Image (tube, rainbow over the protein chains, first blue to last red):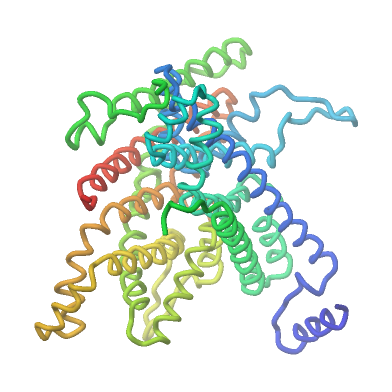
Length: 248
Length: 286
């Protein structure tokens, strides 16, 4: 490894290509930590947004009209407003309204930091799309299947849990794949509220070392890899969950 | 079966375009939520007695022209967001058409390169691409001795057009591939050249199925325009933050950001509904 770093260092001296984010220990550490924050942010948001999607789709099938219109309002609002403004609303407008807590050094600090707000806003944003995706999956389950379960004495929750959901998840995996990739890309907007994720750290590095092009290519490669991993995982999931008799 | 699992029925009286575009219940819901937000903030301000001058509604009314039209005599505000979205969509559509046709080219090398470009721009985050264009293009270019300045908002528009281009390319490719092969074969038997077949037979048929996804991407693009505030363009988002900085009142935070959300909602929601309507109208009946 050391020889590689030395080679990159001499590349900078000789050719002017500054890959400081690799050969400098401090910058490498900083960048890796930023990338890890992005991965963490993406993972937590993916899990939470899927949970929101499942619960929301279940609530949409409820008999309560008020509940249904609240879920519908939530979906339409979050789907049709910019995710960046949503994030600002949560962090800058809602954040200061919450009570402050005193940390172990006796200093008052906001109850939720920027990372937490990014998680909340991105999960709600992607969750709104997930509700629609899961609902379309549920609608694709044949009525006969649901009626069969009903006649076997399953109650509403059991039908949802054991019959509808397992089939619906399989139907909506391709659409879910798209949305989760989009969510992973949208995590870069957490830059705007100073979450130290990949883009934020990268912008710090390129400000310190004026190596915008090199840093930018590194960053774009990282995002391509991240998206690639998600697509690969989803394809694997799709293939391993496939049930005979549906699709080709 | 249990009544709860029944499929959602379309609301009564919801037929035709107007009813589809303006689903009154959702619109009313969002506006009610916004008014609740304003009233709640007002009440909160009363309790905390932060003692601002004038009510929240007055402040919102005062700043609305700035947010919508930008500073007097300058190009900015929500109008700039819309202008950027139009321009980026136009650039992205034309470039995407070229790229999409490149993907179905007869030359393998053109096909591979177009595919690679499409995947690259489709899978990169918008904000990163925006930074890419903003930081790596000069602020002016010289063409044949004439200096052409490139203002920030033009560069931002190009930055937003790149992901649109890649996604348009996918739409074009998908639409062309969805046309039955028989159409190509018939055209060939009538001695049309490949160019003629594409422009006179295939693409006109594609147009109808490309419109709903195209509109969908327009809505997504419009919702991405506040990103240009991060790179320093005077759009509605920047101006809202400026207004908040000028007012220095915490009780204004939620209503101001809320108002911005409502602006975008009122603009994007009808587009989304219209897209659904066209999707249903143009759906292939089986």
